[in-house]
Image (cartoon, rainbow, N blue to C red; front, side, top):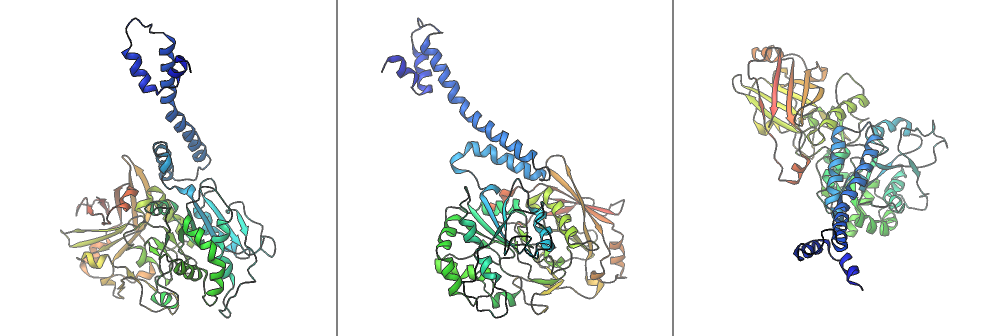
Length: 501
Protein backbone atom coordinates (compact mmCIF):
# COMPACT_ATOMS: atom_id res chain seq x y z
CA UNK A 1 0.00 0.00 0.00
CA UNK A 2 1.34 3.46 -0.89
CA UNK A 3 2.22 6.05 1.72
CA UNK A 4 -0.61 8.30 0.52
CA UNK A 5 -3.19 5.49 0.97
CA UNK A 6 -1.97 4.81 4.49
CA UNK A 7 -2.29 8.50 5.35
CA UNK A 8 -5.85 8.69 4.09
CA UNK A 9 -6.98 5.75 6.23
CA UNK A 10 -5.29 6.78 9.47
CA UNK A 11 -7.24 7.83 12.52
CA UNK A 12 -8.02 11.54 11.79
CA UNK A 13 -6.91 12.69 15.26
CA UNK A 14 -3.51 10.95 14.90
CA UNK A 15 -3.17 12.36 11.39
CA UNK A 16 -3.81 15.88 12.68
CA UNK A 17 -1.12 15.42 15.35
CA UNK A 18 1.42 14.07 12.83
CA UNK A 19 0.82 16.91 10.39
CA UNK A 20 1.32 19.51 13.08
CA UNK A 21 4.64 17.91 14.04
CA UNK A 22 6.02 17.94 10.44
CA UNK A 23 8.86 20.36 9.61
CA UNK A 24 7.78 23.81 8.57
CA UNK A 25 9.12 23.27 5.02
CA UNK A 26 5.99 21.20 4.24
CA UNK A 27 3.47 23.13 2.23
CA UNK A 28 0.37 24.09 4.20
CA UNK A 29 -1.70 23.02 1.18
CA UNK A 30 0.06 19.68 0.67
CA UNK A 31 -2.11 16.72 -0.45
CA UNK A 32 -1.51 14.89 2.84
CA UNK A 33 -2.62 17.87 4.87
CA UNK A 34 -5.81 18.35 2.84
CA UNK A 35 -6.70 14.66 3.12
CA UNK A 36 -6.33 14.94 6.87
CA UNK A 37 -8.61 17.97 7.00
CA UNK A 38 -11.19 16.13 4.89
CA UNK A 39 -11.08 13.07 7.20
CA UNK A 40 -11.57 15.24 10.27
CA UNK A 41 -14.53 17.03 8.71
CA UNK A 42 -16.24 13.75 7.80
CA UNK A 43 -15.56 12.26 11.21
CA UNK A 44 -16.94 15.33 12.97
CA UNK A 45 -20.02 15.58 10.76
CA UNK A 46 -21.34 12.07 11.39
CA UNK A 47 -23.07 12.84 14.72
CA UNK A 48 -24.60 15.98 13.20
CA UNK A 49 -25.91 14.02 10.21
CA UNK A 50 -27.38 11.41 12.57
CA UNK A 51 -29.12 14.04 14.68
CA UNK A 52 -30.35 15.90 11.59
CA UNK A 53 -32.01 12.78 10.19
CA UNK A 54 -33.67 12.06 13.53
CA UNK A 55 -34.67 15.69 14.00
CA UNK A 56 -36.36 15.86 10.59
CA UNK A 57 -38.19 12.66 11.47
CA UNK A 58 -39.26 14.23 14.74
CA UNK A 59 -40.59 17.35 12.96
CA UNK A 60 -42.57 15.13 10.61
CA UNK A 61 -44.06 13.11 13.47
CA UNK A 62 -45.05 16.04 15.63
CA UNK A 63 -46.34 18.12 12.72
CA UNK A 64 -48.65 15.28 11.75
CA UNK A 65 -49.92 15.05 15.32
CA UNK A 66 -51.40 18.48 16.15
CA UNK A 67 -53.46 16.95 18.94
CA UNK A 68 -50.35 15.86 20.87
CA UNK A 69 -49.72 17.84 24.04
CA UNK A 70 -46.83 20.33 24.31
CA UNK A 71 -45.40 18.21 27.11
CA UNK A 72 -45.38 15.16 24.84
CA UNK A 73 -43.64 17.13 22.07
CA UNK A 74 -40.96 18.27 24.52
CA UNK A 75 -40.47 14.69 25.66
CA UNK A 76 -40.04 13.38 22.10
CA UNK A 77 -37.51 16.12 21.30
CA UNK A 78 -35.58 15.19 24.44
CA UNK A 79 -35.59 11.53 23.39
CA UNK A 80 -34.27 12.30 19.90
CA UNK A 81 -31.44 14.41 21.30
CA UNK A 82 -30.50 11.68 23.75
CA UNK A 83 -30.79 8.93 21.15
CA UNK A 84 -27.97 10.58 19.22
CA UNK A 85 -25.81 10.38 22.33
CA UNK A 86 -26.77 6.88 23.39
CA UNK A 87 -27.60 5.10 20.16
CA UNK A 88 -26.83 1.64 21.54
CA UNK A 89 -28.82 2.19 24.72
CA UNK A 90 -31.83 4.21 23.60
CA UNK A 91 -34.29 4.94 26.36
CA UNK A 92 -37.65 3.26 26.12
CA UNK A 93 -40.17 5.49 24.35
CA UNK A 94 -43.74 5.14 23.18
CA UNK A 95 -42.68 3.53 19.89
CA UNK A 96 -41.33 0.53 21.85
CA UNK A 97 -44.78 -0.35 23.23
CA UNK A 98 -47.37 -2.48 21.44
CA UNK A 99 -50.88 -2.20 22.90
CA UNK A 100 -53.36 -5.06 22.65
CA UNK A 101 -56.91 -3.96 23.46
CA UNK A 102 -59.61 -6.55 24.07
CA UNK A 103 -62.90 -5.59 22.41
CA UNK A 104 -65.82 -6.94 20.45
CA UNK A 105 -67.41 -5.86 17.19
CA UNK A 106 -70.85 -5.49 18.77
CA UNK A 107 -69.84 -3.28 21.70
CA UNK A 108 -67.10 -1.15 20.12
CA UNK A 109 -69.59 1.55 19.16
CA UNK A 110 -70.38 2.15 22.84
CA UNK A 111 -66.85 1.66 24.18
CA UNK A 112 -64.62 3.20 21.50
CA UNK A 113 -64.77 6.73 22.92
CA UNK A 114 -62.53 5.78 25.83
CA UNK A 115 -59.78 4.41 23.60
CA UNK A 116 -60.07 7.38 21.26
CA UNK A 117 -59.37 9.72 24.20
CA UNK A 118 -55.76 8.55 24.45
CA UNK A 119 -54.87 6.91 21.11
CA UNK A 120 -52.75 9.03 18.78
CA UNK A 121 -52.51 7.50 15.29
CA UNK A 122 -49.02 8.85 14.56
CA UNK A 123 -47.58 8.00 17.96
CA UNK A 124 -49.08 4.81 19.38
CA UNK A 125 -48.97 1.25 18.09
CA UNK A 126 -52.39 -0.09 19.06
CA UNK A 127 -54.54 -2.95 17.80
CA UNK A 128 -58.08 -3.61 18.98
CA UNK A 129 -58.68 -7.36 18.93
CA UNK A 130 -62.25 -8.29 17.93
CA UNK A 131 -64.28 -11.47 17.98
CA UNK A 132 -65.37 -10.95 14.37
CA UNK A 133 -64.85 -8.59 11.47
CA UNK A 134 -66.78 -5.32 11.80
CA UNK A 135 -69.92 -5.39 9.72
CA UNK A 136 -70.67 -9.03 10.59
CA UNK A 137 -73.49 -8.09 12.96
CA UNK A 138 -71.81 -4.87 14.13
CA UNK A 139 -74.14 -1.84 14.42
CA UNK A 140 -71.89 0.43 12.32
CA UNK A 141 -68.72 0.30 10.18
CA UNK A 142 -65.31 0.67 11.77
CA UNK A 143 -64.76 4.38 12.54
CA UNK A 144 -61.75 6.26 11.18
CA UNK A 145 -61.13 7.74 14.62
CA UNK A 146 -60.48 4.33 16.18
CA UNK A 147 -57.22 2.38 16.23
CA UNK A 148 -56.80 -0.39 13.64
CA UNK A 149 -58.30 -3.74 14.48
CA UNK A 150 -57.37 -7.40 14.22
CA UNK A 151 -59.72 -10.36 14.32
CA UNK A 152 -58.78 -12.97 16.91
CA UNK A 153 -58.25 -16.58 15.95
CA UNK A 154 -60.98 -19.11 16.63
CA UNK A 155 -60.70 -20.41 20.22
CA UNK A 156 -63.49 -22.99 20.24
CA UNK A 157 -60.94 -25.79 20.68
CA UNK A 158 -59.94 -24.56 24.15
CA UNK A 159 -61.55 -25.65 27.39
CA UNK A 160 -63.57 -23.22 29.53
CA UNK A 161 -65.27 -24.47 32.68
CA UNK A 162 -66.87 -21.34 34.15
CA UNK A 163 -70.51 -22.12 33.57
CA UNK A 164 -72.44 -19.23 32.12
CA UNK A 165 -69.45 -16.86 32.09
CA UNK A 166 -68.23 -15.56 28.75
CA UNK A 167 -65.77 -17.64 26.76
CA UNK A 168 -64.28 -14.36 25.52
CA UNK A 169 -61.81 -14.74 28.39
CA UNK A 170 -60.01 -17.39 26.33
CA UNK A 171 -59.81 -15.20 23.25
CA UNK A 172 -58.62 -12.16 25.18
CA UNK A 173 -55.99 -14.19 27.04
CA UNK A 174 -54.45 -15.04 23.66
CA UNK A 175 -54.10 -11.41 22.57
CA UNK A 176 -50.54 -11.26 23.88
CA UNK A 177 -49.68 -14.38 21.86
CA UNK A 178 -51.26 -13.09 18.65
CA UNK A 179 -49.66 -9.68 19.18
CA UNK A 180 -46.25 -11.30 19.61
CA UNK A 181 -46.72 -13.37 16.47
CA UNK A 182 -47.27 -10.24 14.39
CA UNK A 183 -43.48 -9.97 14.46
CA UNK A 184 -43.38 -6.17 14.65
CA UNK A 185 -39.96 -4.57 15.03
CA UNK A 186 -38.55 -2.80 18.07
CA UNK A 187 -41.20 -3.99 20.51
CA UNK A 188 -39.92 -3.95 24.08
CA UNK A 189 -43.23 -4.14 25.95
CA UNK A 190 -46.64 -5.66 25.30
CA UNK A 191 -49.35 -3.74 27.16
CA UNK A 192 -52.78 -5.31 27.53
CA UNK A 193 -55.98 -3.41 28.28
CA UNK A 194 -59.75 -3.43 27.81
CA UNK A 195 -61.86 -1.38 25.45
CA UNK A 196 -62.95 0.82 28.39
CA UNK A 197 -59.41 1.42 29.66
CA UNK A 198 -57.94 4.91 29.43
CA UNK A 199 -54.13 4.92 29.38
CA UNK A 200 -52.02 7.93 30.29
CA UNK A 201 -49.26 6.92 27.95
CA UNK A 202 -46.53 9.40 28.85
CA UNK A 203 -46.68 8.21 32.44
CA UNK A 204 -46.80 4.60 31.28
CA UNK A 205 -43.55 5.15 29.36
CA UNK A 206 -41.90 6.69 32.41
CA UNK A 207 -42.96 3.75 34.58
CA UNK A 208 -41.62 1.16 32.12
CA UNK A 209 -38.32 3.04 31.80
CA UNK A 210 -37.53 2.04 35.36
CA UNK A 211 -37.22 -1.58 34.28
CA UNK A 212 -34.80 -3.40 32.01
CA UNK A 213 -36.84 -4.57 29.02
CA UNK A 214 -34.26 -7.30 28.38
CA UNK A 215 -35.33 -9.01 31.60
CA UNK A 216 -38.58 -10.84 32.31
CA UNK A 217 -41.05 -8.35 33.85
CA UNK A 218 -44.78 -8.59 34.48
CA UNK A 219 -46.02 -5.19 35.67
CA UNK A 220 -49.51 -4.10 36.72
CA UNK A 221 -51.87 -3.43 39.61
CA UNK A 222 -54.39 -5.13 41.88
CA UNK A 223 -58.12 -4.73 42.33
CA UNK A 224 -59.27 -2.14 44.84
CA UNK A 225 -61.88 -4.46 46.42
CA UNK A 226 -60.69 -7.22 48.73
CA UNK A 227 -63.62 -9.42 47.71
CA UNK A 228 -62.24 -9.34 44.17
CA UNK A 229 -58.70 -10.36 45.06
CA UNK A 230 -60.01 -13.10 47.34
CA UNK A 231 -62.10 -14.44 44.45
CA UNK A 232 -59.32 -14.12 41.89
CA UNK A 233 -55.79 -13.44 43.05
CA UNK A 234 -53.42 -11.09 44.87
CA UNK A 235 -50.64 -12.08 42.49
CA UNK A 236 -52.06 -11.08 39.11
CA UNK A 237 -52.13 -7.87 37.13
CA UNK A 238 -55.78 -7.01 36.64
CA UNK A 239 -56.46 -6.69 32.93
CA UNK A 240 -58.83 -3.75 32.91
CA UNK A 241 -56.30 -1.58 34.68
CA UNK A 242 -53.79 -2.90 32.16
CA UNK A 243 -50.54 -4.78 32.57
CA UNK A 244 -47.20 -4.78 30.76
CA UNK A 245 -45.08 -7.78 29.74
CA UNK A 246 -41.49 -7.38 28.60
CA UNK A 247 -40.47 -8.95 25.30
CA UNK A 248 -38.39 -11.84 26.77
CA UNK A 249 -41.24 -12.77 29.09
CA UNK A 250 -43.75 -12.57 26.25
CA UNK A 251 -41.56 -14.96 24.22
CA UNK A 252 -41.65 -17.49 27.07
CA UNK A 253 -45.37 -16.93 27.71
CA UNK A 254 -46.25 -17.50 24.06
CA UNK A 255 -44.50 -20.86 24.17
CA UNK A 256 -46.76 -22.24 26.94
CA UNK A 257 -49.90 -20.08 26.76
CA UNK A 258 -52.21 -22.41 24.89
CA UNK A 259 -51.45 -25.24 27.31
CA UNK A 260 -52.03 -22.89 30.24
CA UNK A 261 -55.43 -21.91 28.94
CA UNK A 262 -56.55 -25.53 29.07
CA UNK A 263 -54.84 -26.20 32.42
CA UNK A 264 -56.60 -23.18 33.96
CA UNK A 265 -59.94 -23.75 32.24
CA UNK A 266 -61.76 -23.07 35.52
CA UNK A 267 -60.28 -19.57 35.84
CA UNK A 268 -62.87 -16.88 35.11
CA UNK A 269 -60.94 -14.09 33.42
CA UNK A 270 -58.23 -13.71 30.81
CA UNK A 271 -55.96 -11.90 33.26
CA UNK A 272 -56.29 -14.76 35.73
CA UNK A 273 -55.29 -17.26 33.06
CA UNK A 274 -52.24 -15.13 32.19
CA UNK A 275 -51.36 -15.03 35.89
CA UNK A 276 -51.51 -18.83 36.05
CA UNK A 277 -48.97 -19.01 33.23
CA UNK A 278 -46.73 -16.50 34.98
CA UNK A 279 -46.70 -18.70 38.05
CA UNK A 280 -45.48 -21.61 35.93
CA UNK A 281 -42.75 -19.45 34.37
CA UNK A 282 -41.81 -18.21 37.83
CA UNK A 283 -42.20 -14.46 37.28
CA UNK A 284 -44.12 -12.56 39.98
CA UNK A 285 -46.17 -9.44 39.46
CA UNK A 286 -44.26 -6.19 39.88
CA UNK A 287 -46.91 -3.91 41.36
CA UNK A 288 -47.19 -0.29 40.23
CA UNK A 289 -49.72 1.87 42.06
CA UNK A 290 -50.68 3.97 39.02
CA UNK A 291 -52.56 1.13 37.26
CA UNK A 292 -56.20 1.48 38.37
CA UNK A 293 -58.61 -1.41 37.89
CA UNK A 294 -61.32 0.74 39.53
CA UNK A 295 -63.19 -2.23 40.99
CA UNK A 296 -65.45 0.14 42.89
CA UNK A 297 -69.03 1.35 42.62
CA UNK A 298 -70.33 4.86 43.20
CA UNK A 299 -68.29 8.05 43.32
CA UNK A 300 -64.52 7.71 42.66
CA UNK A 301 -63.89 11.14 44.20
CA UNK A 302 -62.36 9.88 47.45
CA UNK A 303 -59.87 7.62 45.68
CA UNK A 304 -58.72 10.21 43.15
CA UNK A 305 -58.51 13.04 45.68
CA UNK A 306 -55.88 11.15 47.68
CA UNK A 307 -54.01 9.39 44.88
CA UNK A 308 -51.08 7.18 45.90
CA UNK A 309 -47.58 8.55 45.45
CA UNK A 310 -47.15 7.24 41.90
CA UNK A 311 -47.76 8.50 38.36
CA UNK A 312 -51.27 8.06 36.99
CA UNK A 313 -51.08 5.25 34.38
CA UNK A 314 -54.61 4.01 33.72
CA UNK A 315 -58.30 4.16 34.66
CA UNK A 316 -60.83 1.41 34.03
CA UNK A 317 -64.56 0.70 34.54
CA UNK A 318 -65.44 4.32 33.84
CA UNK A 319 -68.94 3.27 32.70
CA UNK A 320 -69.56 1.68 36.09
CA UNK A 321 -68.77 4.64 38.31
CA UNK A 322 -70.11 8.17 38.54
CA UNK A 323 -68.46 10.81 36.31
CA UNK A 324 -65.13 12.08 37.65
CA UNK A 325 -66.55 15.62 37.77
CA UNK A 326 -70.13 16.55 38.70
CA UNK A 327 -72.66 17.93 36.21
CA UNK A 328 -70.91 16.63 33.05
CA UNK A 329 -70.90 13.31 31.19
CA UNK A 330 -68.45 10.50 31.84
CA UNK A 331 -66.58 11.12 28.59
CA UNK A 332 -66.41 14.87 29.15
CA UNK A 333 -65.18 14.35 32.70
CA UNK A 334 -62.28 12.20 31.47
CA UNK A 335 -61.51 14.81 28.81
CA UNK A 336 -61.33 17.43 31.56
CA UNK A 337 -58.84 15.36 33.55
CA UNK A 338 -56.79 14.73 30.40
CA UNK A 339 -56.62 18.49 29.81
CA UNK A 340 -54.78 18.91 33.11
CA UNK A 341 -52.66 15.81 32.50
CA UNK A 342 -51.44 17.07 29.12
CA UNK A 343 -50.07 20.23 30.75
CA UNK A 344 -47.93 18.33 33.25
CA UNK A 345 -48.27 14.53 32.86
CA UNK A 346 -46.14 13.52 35.84
CA UNK A 347 -48.08 15.75 38.23
CA UNK A 348 -51.60 14.57 37.33
CA UNK A 349 -53.55 13.70 40.52
CA UNK A 350 -50.45 14.16 42.68
CA UNK A 351 -51.54 14.77 46.25
CA UNK A 352 -50.24 17.32 48.72
CA UNK A 353 -51.56 19.31 51.67
CA UNK A 354 -50.76 22.46 53.64
CA UNK A 355 -52.10 24.63 56.43
CA UNK A 356 -53.17 28.20 57.18
CA UNK A 357 -52.22 28.39 60.85
CA UNK A 358 -53.69 31.89 61.24
CA UNK A 359 -57.17 30.44 60.74
CA UNK A 360 -56.49 26.80 61.61
CA UNK A 361 -57.39 25.72 58.07
CA UNK A 362 -56.23 22.52 56.35
CA UNK A 363 -56.00 22.36 52.54
CA UNK A 364 -55.64 19.15 50.52
CA UNK A 365 -54.75 19.32 46.81
CA UNK A 366 -55.10 16.62 44.16
CA UNK A 367 -53.43 18.40 41.23
CA UNK A 368 -55.63 18.71 38.17
CA UNK A 369 -58.66 17.33 39.99
CA UNK A 370 -59.73 18.86 43.30
CA UNK A 371 -58.92 21.00 46.33
CA UNK A 372 -60.47 20.29 49.73
CA UNK A 373 -60.72 22.97 52.43
CA UNK A 374 -61.23 21.95 56.06
CA UNK A 375 -61.90 24.92 58.38
CA UNK A 376 -60.06 23.08 61.15
CA UNK A 377 -56.74 21.29 61.54
CA UNK A 378 -56.48 17.76 60.17
CA UNK A 379 -53.31 15.70 60.52
CA UNK A 380 -51.28 14.69 57.48
CA UNK A 381 -51.90 11.04 58.29
CA UNK A 382 -55.65 11.53 57.98
CA UNK A 383 -55.47 13.73 54.87
CA UNK A 384 -53.42 11.09 53.05
CA UNK A 385 -56.20 8.48 53.46
CA UNK A 386 -58.94 8.43 50.77
CA UNK A 387 -62.47 9.35 51.79
CA UNK A 388 -64.84 6.43 51.33
CA UNK A 389 -67.18 7.88 48.72
CA UNK A 390 -67.49 4.51 46.97
CA UNK A 391 -68.44 0.92 47.73
CA UNK A 392 -67.02 -2.47 46.84
CA UNK A 393 -67.36 -3.92 43.35
CA UNK A 394 -69.45 -7.03 43.96
CA UNK A 395 -71.56 -6.58 47.07
CA UNK A 396 -71.68 -2.75 47.29
CA UNK A 397 -70.31 -2.98 50.82
CA UNK A 398 -68.54 -0.18 52.67
CA UNK A 399 -65.37 -2.26 53.05
CA UNK A 400 -62.84 -3.82 52.88
CA UNK A 401 -60.49 -2.39 50.27
CA UNK A 402 -56.86 -3.13 49.44
CA UNK A 403 -55.85 0.31 50.76
CA UNK A 404 -56.80 2.43 53.78
CA UNK A 405 -60.03 4.43 53.65
CA UNK A 406 -61.75 6.80 56.06
CA UNK A 407 -65.44 7.36 56.61
CA UNK A 408 -67.15 10.15 54.70
CA UNK A 409 -69.22 11.58 57.53
CA UNK A 410 -72.89 12.37 57.01
CA UNK A 411 -72.40 15.46 59.20
CA UNK A 412 -71.74 18.47 56.90
CA UNK A 413 -69.66 20.04 59.70
CA UNK A 414 -67.13 17.21 59.38
CA UNK A 415 -66.83 17.26 55.60
CA UNK A 416 -64.46 19.34 53.50
CA UNK A 417 -65.56 22.24 51.34
CA UNK A 418 -64.85 20.90 47.85
CA UNK A 419 -63.45 22.72 44.80
CA UNK A 420 -63.04 21.06 41.39
CA UNK A 421 -60.48 21.64 38.66
CA UNK A 422 -61.65 24.37 36.31
CA UNK A 423 -58.74 25.13 33.98
CA UNK A 424 -54.99 25.24 33.40
CA UNK A 425 -52.59 27.54 31.64
CA UNK A 426 -48.85 27.44 31.10
CA UNK A 427 -46.82 30.24 32.63
CA UNK A 428 -43.19 31.13 32.10
CA UNK A 429 -40.27 29.00 33.30
CA UNK A 430 -41.99 25.64 32.78
CA UNK A 431 -44.76 26.24 35.31
CA UNK A 432 -48.52 25.78 35.28
CA UNK A 433 -51.31 27.64 36.99
CA UNK A 434 -54.36 25.49 37.67
CA UNK A 435 -57.64 26.91 38.90
CA UNK A 436 -60.31 25.24 41.02
CA UNK A 437 -63.81 26.50 41.74
CA UNK A 438 -66.47 25.46 44.15
CA UNK A 439 -69.22 23.29 42.73
CA UNK A 440 -72.26 22.48 44.82
CA UNK A 441 -72.15 18.71 44.61
CA UNK A 442 -75.32 17.09 45.99
CA UNK A 443 -73.27 14.02 46.89
CA UNK A 444 -71.26 16.08 49.36
CA UNK A 445 -74.17 16.89 51.69
CA UNK A 446 -75.82 20.00 53.10
CA UNK A 447 -74.21 23.20 54.36
CA UNK A 448 -72.76 23.48 57.85
CA UNK A 449 -74.02 26.54 59.71
CA UNK A 450 -71.07 26.72 62.10
CA UNK A 451 -69.08 29.98 62.14
CA UNK A 452 -65.81 28.49 60.91
CA UNK A 453 -67.61 26.94 57.92
CA UNK A 454 -69.31 30.26 57.14
CA UNK A 455 -65.85 31.78 56.61
CA UNK A 456 -64.76 28.80 54.49
CA UNK A 457 -67.84 29.14 52.26
CA UNK A 458 -66.70 32.68 51.36
CA UNK A 459 -63.76 31.17 49.46
CA UNK A 460 -64.73 31.07 45.80
CA UNK A 461 -61.77 29.14 44.46
CA UNK A 462 -58.08 28.29 44.44
CA UNK A 463 -55.20 28.97 42.09
CA UNK A 464 -52.31 26.50 42.31
CA UNK A 465 -48.89 27.39 40.92
CA UNK A 466 -46.47 24.52 40.32
CA UNK A 467 -43.31 23.87 38.34
CA UNK A 468 -43.60 21.04 35.80
CA UNK A 469 -42.76 17.81 37.60
CA UNK A 470 -39.66 16.16 36.16
CA UNK A 471 -40.59 12.53 35.33
CA UNK A 472 -37.18 11.44 36.61
CA UNK A 473 -38.51 12.05 40.11
CA UNK A 474 -40.18 8.63 39.89
CA UNK A 475 -36.75 6.98 39.68
CA UNK A 476 -35.93 8.31 43.14
CA UNK A 477 -37.17 7.36 46.58
CA UNK A 478 -40.80 8.55 46.63
CA UNK A 479 -41.69 11.62 48.66
CA UNK A 480 -44.75 13.84 48.57
CA UNK A 481 -44.12 17.43 47.54
CA UNK A 482 -45.11 20.25 49.86
CA UNK A 483 -47.40 23.21 49.34
CA UNK A 484 -47.93 26.55 50.99
CA UNK A 485 -50.65 29.19 50.99
CA UNK A 486 -49.15 32.23 49.33
CA UNK A 487 -51.52 34.92 50.59
CA UNK A 488 -52.71 33.57 53.94
CA UNK A 489 -55.79 35.45 55.13
CA UNK A 490 -55.36 38.34 52.70
CA UNK A 491 -57.38 37.09 49.74
CA UNK A 492 -59.19 40.00 48.05
CA UNK A 493 -61.35 38.26 45.47
CA UNK A 494 -62.29 35.15 47.38
CA UNK A 495 -59.56 33.15 45.64
CA UNK A 496 -56.75 31.57 47.64
CA UNK A 497 -53.35 31.08 46.05
CA UNK A 498 -51.21 28.00 46.64
CA UNK A 499 -47.69 27.18 45.55
CA UNK A 500 -46.43 23.59 45.33
CA UNK A 501 -42.75 23.37 46.22
